[in-house]
Image (cartoon, helix red, strand yellow):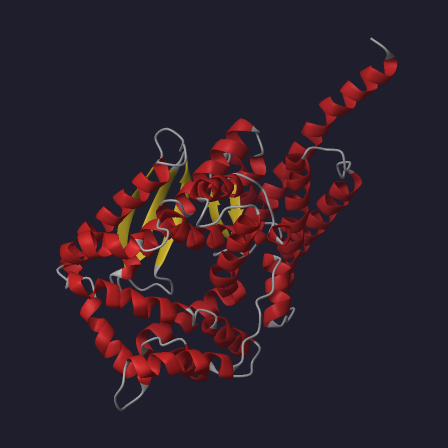
Length: 424
């Protein structure tokens, strides 16, 4: 064996441990920041002794930031060559950007003030477009004609929509059926890890409508908030978004592909305020369209879920015509959050904005403002994330006309360490 070849082999053998050392320190920094920010660590299923050691050490925010700076320096010094395989380059870029995001969160916790757009760029690697009031007024004009009468549009719309609330005593049966259908559709196109499963709990007094708590071992706990009425469309929305092919599948595939198959320990921790969340929320929302293309969702609702909920199935088509119109108002929430978090409006004005331009009933709008208080610019991950994921997959050939290709690209995205900026 000649010496150059020996040198190459030794370099290749040395590289993985170096990255693994950086990854281990990254995990511990995320856990340490979680000791200062109760919402920061969304999931952790790595060695329990690491968390115990972090708790015992009680590192301060300055020490956490210094640790991140050191790891970024190490990453910069060990950047893979342009000839390296894509997955290796993605891993390096992922760790770099996640650490930059961690530093931004530390800065926020130590008092640094960022605008809404500066914050979303620093934390989530993306900035949502700005939409004017005129943009939403044009969309609302169509709905105003759809619901003629006197009084505010939100009152006319809400009075019509109340007929489509899932009765509390039928909620679990409707959700269970929706989950079963979403899982069956996902399994037609994707192979999931053996033994994957999740449980559903119904909770109250939360600022969110539902949450997936990934437990590791291909298991999730999904909590559904029942503070406010739950409409029939939320059954499929939440079953897909939180379960199949959304968060549960995303986390399970990352654990299978990157943690177990590649030994990338950094994926045993999920920092919520990080670029990973835009991919997670974007794929979870776009996954609804992947699982139910065209009119398949409305047909399932009419045939199965409306009757199961005791609702008038003949109104399903009408319901989803309105649903698609209201869905165009999704970015109104971003504008409310941007203005509120930038200090341009107060909580009441933000609630008024959501009620007027997002057509949220007062209680739901107030709940959304509480979400802004707790999660801030995180709101961009749902709508902007969905649009970025959709555009990325369609650009690679995953369209309505090529559903198998769309599922293939979707699965590859779920299983990879791609960043939001890498979707463009």
